[in-house]
Amino acid sequence: MNFWRIFFVGGLIAYRGLFNWIRPSMYIPTMLGSPLFQLIFFTKLGQFARAQSADFYIVGNSVQVAAMASIYGMAMAIANERSFGTLGPLLASPANRAAVFLGRGLPVLANGLFVSTFTFLAGALFLGFRPELATLPALAAVVVVTTASCTSFGMMLGSIGLRAKDYMFAANLTYFLMLLFCGVNIPIAVLPGWMSAISRCLPLTHGIAAARQVANGATLGDVSGLVWTELGIGPVYAVGAFVLFRVLERESRRSAVLDAY
Amino acid sequence: MSSQLLRIARLFRAGFVINGKMLATSTFFMLIAVVQPVIFATIAFYMFRSGGRAGTLLYASLGAGMMGVWSTTLFASGGMIQWQRWQGTLELGVASPVSLPLIYLPFCVANSFTGAYALGATLLWGRLLFGVPLQLAHPWAFVLALPTVVISLSLLGLLLASTFVLYRNANAMSNLLEYPVWIASGLVFSTSILPGWSHPFSWVLPPYWGILALRHAAFGGNAWTPIGMALLLGGVSVVLATFTLRWFEHLARARATLALT
Image (tube, rainbow over all chains, first blue to last red; front, side, top):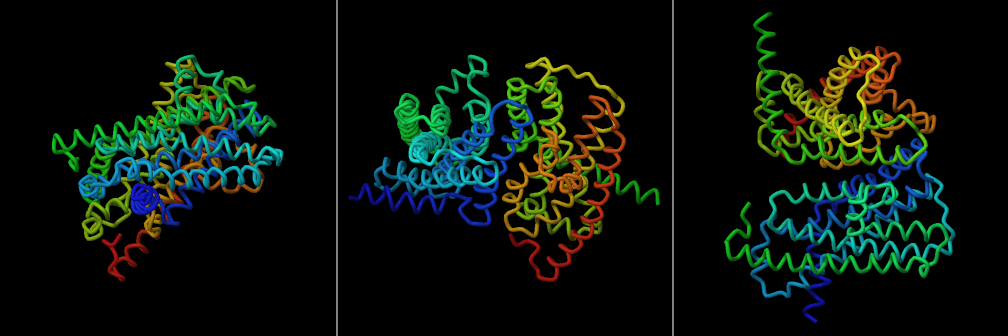
């Protein structure tokens, strides 16, 4: 019972306190405005380059913008404990670390889904995205899986942020690299071998590929391989992030650098 | 008169050097001015390469470089007064006998000058990785266009600095305005693919004329009109910024809110 209370209530309170962009004056321009214009920018660039259809960019970017919520949100929800000076009291508490750590992912996941849905709707409204209505449940399922794996990846960055001086640099860099590596705007087949090898280990890549096929009429069964791979990537990063969190916690205690910059 | 000019020149040099040093040690601005443009240039290269539009790699290099100049100007100049406030140096600037625009102009020039790294980075990146030749139709016009672009964006930066200060979350405005100006200025695609109603917005943006000047100098065409327009809009920006900075100073003194965030 205590585990779930920390997981749900603690996660929500921590998210509200630590996610810097939660106020409307910050949230609307950053979490809604920026994804909207990112979508328009890459769709227009694709149109000018005569590379792919508009739907290719709409689906790719609408799924990828969930990473904005997942990467930045998760990084802030963990690493800001250190920036705000609350890491010491948190780690001195007897609370279950898994509940503390994983509970923060749930609001991040919900936010990622909201941002992604908003961007899909913007694609429909401004850029003529018209998937079959019957494909929407499958598309939603793929987006949920992809956002969850992105959130796990964000946890990894958050854990690193417990020790690294400038975690926002890592978050910004990761977000931009995802645009390049994850097949958001470039088909993976066009990338050199080493880049496509990296892209297959990242969240988003398989989810975006599955979402594109589903938007074109494929069923969940048709893309089950891609969805299962995306589903498998999430826990790998989540476990890696949690192990890193515990290791860094132990190291910080041992070398007395918990809040040191 | 000459001693007055000498004092202004000394002031300009001091502001330029100190802000240039601060930006050079900021990982965030190095990311914005060097890493981000290179990533966007790579995305644009692959999109153009996979598309049907030939001979556009230098076009992409120049555009991605200009994206970096704009981003650096936007984030550095847009948030400049807010940062001065956080650092506790705003009062010193306002209390000094020199007028505010004269104090902050060299800061803005340093911001855009740092942004110009982006152009060097993307041209070098394109040459080394993608073999993009830097063959310029009008080399002298290009050499003149480059500082013109930097100066006109600096002057626009002063206007951003003086208006964003009225908005509590200047960084949110910066996040919001990055993509729209890339789009409206047609930095990596022609504005002819945008709807007609958006064209007047493009015409009042110095980056629109700046990229036209660079493109015409590189590929052939009349570079002088865009260079003149960029300078004209820069001049308009500095006149507006002088008024808005005076207004900001008056309000801040009258309400005693200068140091309040």
